[in-house]
Length: 123
View 1 (cartoon, one colour):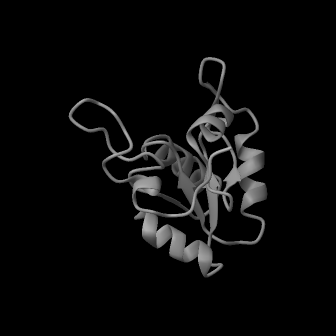
View 2 (spheres, rainbow, N blue to C red):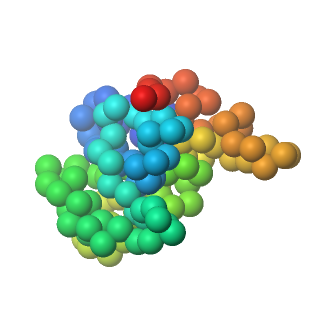
């Protein structure tokens, strides 16, 4: 789903926003204050988060759909698929937090949560 629709659902209380990026990404690139941090993979080495299933189930306790946000929309697809396997309703947020790469392979200027002017902060 689009970032704008995801934010609307969060504001309306219809869904839970889940940030599946690493702790380092949230700290250095920025984060959405309303999002629950549940890393799909974690440093060092981008190893799978062994607590992902438990954490994502806890995020879904209220029975609301989960809206998965990552850097570019790739890890969030995998996280949403895993949540679905666990019996949860989950959606991927297109373009992620930083958007699609430009012609120089840099992110931040083509789409994404930040570029679309949705709420976020930097520590």
